[in-house]
Image (cartoon, rainbow, N blue to C red; front, side):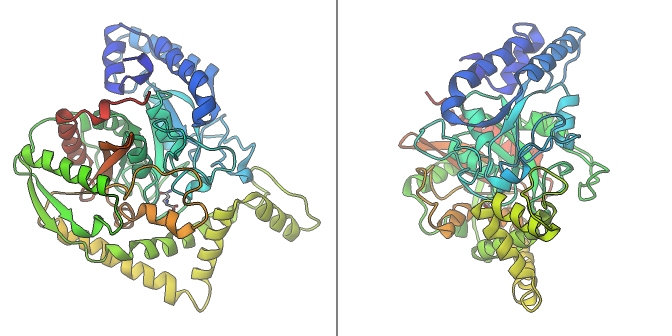
Length: 482
Ligand code: GLN
């Protein structure tokens, strides 16, 4: 396999044995970016000089005998995460030219661990979307088929890994934005439990839902990245005061007696036949490995979509109020503060972001608050309770990540609800704050399919262990696009 398509674990072995240097790996990945990204469009900003400097520094640490998981590994960062000295736009015109003076905690931890930061990755504007078509700057193409979307909102993060333009990337997931693009690009993507990874420095979309997580080829690679970014942070009061387990040490063992629940509601109406079949075949593999399969029900999951589009838009309308053209990024001219504010926000937010701000502002307005926002919060509790009840009987839940494989550009852009429906399988998990992982489990017409595994809060070690066991029996995660 070409150097740029190696897994993080393979790179680690070769780096530690001295077979390759981080400089050679980083150069190989930068060369791949040069030759491929003109077509794929995953990166909004590439920092070649910075990456080569960091690679040389990592090589010095390796030569001095340091042996840690991320040391010298070339990585990409979703453009919603603040990076000191590198542009951070959230793929929005409103943040054009903004260069943060600090790193997000997850980025700072990767850097401290010796990760090599290649650049910033395209996304739907402010992480609102499922196809990356809402980026204000460029399209990102699915590396398996350039006529198709990579999913979203972390489409650049998914496409970069799939195209060999980063060994691993950080994405964010509010309603599915790590898992769905991972599924559509044939890689592994983990959304950790709410509170597992500090959100400090992640530009907020919906603060009660947002989580940062790894996007990689394998579950083992995801474990290596999560190890570094997880853990409490005094700068994020919602980060959990819990010890971080040794995720790599948790891998291995067999699946005998692991109880896996199959929720009939997440095999949604309208799911593509090939997706349904591939996910069921994957569950069969788990069964053959000793897992005990049980039918379960998540009766309120059908309400997840309306609940999410009230809660997330309400939080977004409040969070995005800070983009007033005064403190960050771009400003449109106006004679008064009011005119300047209206011009900046009217000119520079894209249509989907404006739609969400309007929906959220409406849901929170006097007279409607009880009917919409309060009701949505109540139903959110019911959705969470469904999972609590299910996890009394099963250890893990298995479902599709997305009801379909990657679709063509433009297919869902005229109908916002059709686009929102892309997330029906991932939204309930987000509303419940639970961890979920997508692992490759098949192909339809050359396009990847994802299996979603969901666990109780802070069960990342077990999710990664089951995913790794599945990947030890299958080779979907070893395929690479041509
Ligand atoms: N696609 C969903 C949305 O548009 C989820 C996005 C996300 O997880 N950031 O809101």
